[in-house]
Amino acid sequence: MLEEFWHYLGVRAVSREARILGYAREMAALQARHRRCRQAWHPHILATKRAVLKAAQGRHNQGGAALIIGGGSAHDLPIKALLQQFEQIVLLDIAFSYRTRRLAKIWPGRVFCHLHDVTGTVDWLAQHRQIPPQALVNKPPHPTLPIKPHWIASVNCLTQLPLLPLDWLATTAPEPAQLETFGRALILAHLNWLDSWQAPVCLITEIEDQHHGRNGIIDRTDYRPIMAGYIQHADQLASWNWTVNPPGEMADGMWESRTVAAYLK
Picture 1: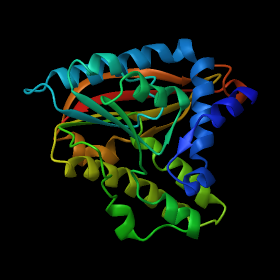
Picture 2: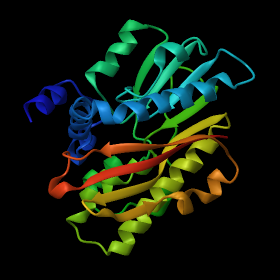
Picture 3: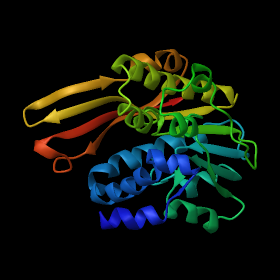
Picture 4: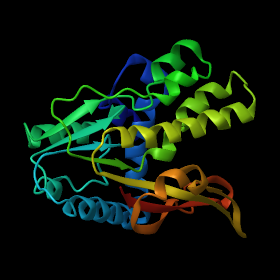
């Protein structure tokens, strides 16, 4: 807890409302978990970096600017290697760790940290604590950026977008089916938002969760049906397993793994 507190002090969030919903706290917890689970996470982080770099190197035109969504932590981003492919990189997230914000100081004028809520719903949720209007959910706003991106990457954040909003709404006790529909809508809205940039997109996301007990898999969640309309028009670059919560991280002998895939569109 003390480690998370020190990380929390270094987190910057896009708004007071984002802090109310827990985004700063979650970023601090992620930093602490990264250290605790470093060995278990290493293959996933390495695979993510390789996939991002492979997607960037496959472009026909070098240079220009890259926009990376989910860059608030940056543990899984090959920033130095990407700077050989792009003139500038914009990291976009709802909260940034102190470590990531230092990158803009290491590479001034080339790396930028831009705070933005890609769902466009967080402020509304904090103020109303109800499922937002469909029009708001379906049309996430584009950020006002210092540069125009020529290449987009959404990295390890797609299926995480509904988590804190759904946690926030759980105490208002809407019907579970309504919460599920809202969560799916946030995922689909992000996929449409990526397409709306009209630039090459690299999407790295979990496609399946597996929850394990002492005697095997307890349950699994398959995200591919939600993503079907997107991935059928994309090329899969790679796929790998990630032990996100290794044995000992969860109670009662449980542990959690994910199947992650990288797509290029």
